[in-house]
Every structure is written in structure tokens, then in C-alpha cells.
Length: 371
Image 1 (tube, rainbow, N blue to C red):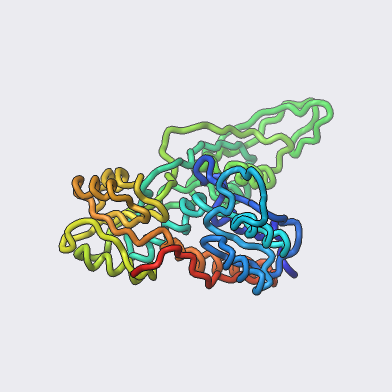
Image 2 (cartoon, rainbow, N blue to C red; image 1 turned 120 degrees about the vertical axis):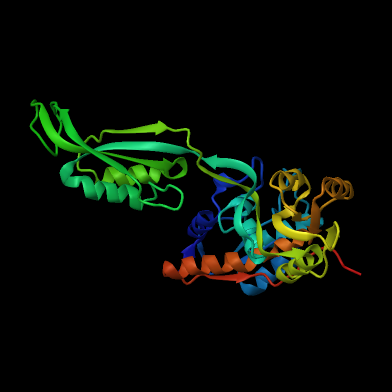
């Protein structure tokens, strides 16, 4: 059995939900159709003509990439231009292109977690907060006979997480009253008669992102025709999500050694370094892609060094004056995502019994030569 394109994208969006993307980011299906079975998928950082040729040679019907091929609305589609020729080749060979960009950067296990893990950072936190998964209080009233099954359904679906504890709830016994009216089909009681039932009030917290899933599980497990439940907004801070990560090295290292570590782990031929090469580095901020605007966030978190690409001259001076070191491995360091996405999607396919195969692009898309 081959997986359909839409199914593959559902897997991808489990890894990197589209809701995490920053506003106006160019993500999602940019070209082609997902309404067919897919034999092979190519995972790439950039979609260049060489990458498209690689997909054609592989027999791939879908490319999942990090960087968009359409950044702004097209005014025309002239096939004698470089971009037009790229689109023409994709269309002629019926290859769809799907983009997962800032949503993949932000997602758990995504680009910035990969970078932090590659450097062995510990106790990582979000560098640049872009949102928060708000918490809500769920209260539901359940007949005592179904207390365990309903509570289990709610908590097993992801409700009740507090810090490093799961399946947290509060339970209070009491008496529920109701009168089934004409046309009802009550699980307990008789039409027209007020019933008194021993019930349990179950309270727990849920992130708003999984509200629908938790409620579906609760309603499915609940025996009542009409379920009495409440949802309350609460002031407790939910899980933050955002761009970049900041954490600590296991052991402090001189800036020069951290720079060599970055070169090794990101497989880049050189890095640009700002700061005293002998300075001891303990706290490290990382951000995939262009990191100029993240300097202030790194300073806010007390980072000793920021590892990010595309740092411009004046930003480097500002960081130096502020006491922040910088290691710039270039934008192409994000190629670290290709193997991870390939392996994770292939595992999902195997779990689902799908014979679709996933392949990391072998094409180097670094536009710079280093002399």
C-alpha cells in the first residue's frame, strides 16, 4: 500500500503543525496536487533545478522542502526564465512541492531543537517566544459507574499535564439531578421524572491546542445523552513556543572550541566568529536561518554566544559592544533537517504499513564558494 499525498502531509503536520508558523510565512502546498498515491518523497532544504533533476531521477512525486519556491505572488509564468523553467519542469514531471518553514523551526524536535541537540545543549528553552499554548480548566460530571473510563479517556488523550507530571486530576463526589423530557433517551432515569444520581466531578487542565481531541474522547466515553461539562480560561502560563533555543553546554569551552564544534556538527567548511576567541562560553543561543533579529533575545536570556546565520556587519558590531559573541555558520547549516525529517517520516510510514519511501536530498544547495 502506498500512502496518499494528503496522508503524508498529515504526518508532516504532526511533526510541524501549520498553526505554529509566523504570520505571512509561505508554507504548505505551493505547487502540484496531493490527491494521489506517492511512491517516493524527496526531502530537501531548498528546491533548486538540480534538486528537481534529482527528484526526477529518483522517480519522486513529492518534494518536502524547508525553503519556499514561491516567496511572493507571481506576476507571470515565463518558462524562459530560471524560476519559470523550474516551475515548468516540476509541472511537466507532475512533482508536487510542499513547504514546512517556520512551523518546522518552532516545532518540538524541529530545526532549532536539532541544532541545540547537535551542540549538546542542556536545559533548553525557547529563545524568541512567538506564542503560547493557553491552558483551560475542564470540568465534567460523570456517573460514578463510569468515573474511571471517562477520566482515563480524558487523561490518556493528553489532558492533565502539569510540569513533569501527567494524568493529573481532581475528583469530588456529589449528587446530580435532572429530569428527562419528552423525546429523550436517557441512559439513567425515566422520562418526566426527576432523577438523583451519584456522580463524580472530574477536573483537569488541557492545552487549548488539544481541546477538540480531548472533548471528542470525553464525549465518546461518557454514557450520557447530554454531557454536562464546563471549560474555563485560566491564568496559569501554558507551554511557550517560538524560534530558536537557548541552553548550556555540559562543560564551559573557549569560544574557539565552540566554533570548531559548530563546524563539525553542522558540517560547514568555515564559520564567522565575533568576540574574544579565548572567552569562556557556557550559555549558547541557537537559531536556524537568518539570526540578526535574535541578538536582543540572546542578550535577554544571558547567552554568551549566538549561533545563527546571515549576521550582517552592523549587527555584529552591536553584538560585540553588548558583550555577545556570535558564531555564524551560514544559512545552509539548516541542511541538518534533511536526515531527521526523512527518518521520522519513514518511521511513520512503516508504522502505518505504507510502502512509500523517503529520501534525503544529496544535492548541496550552498550558493557560496569559500576561497
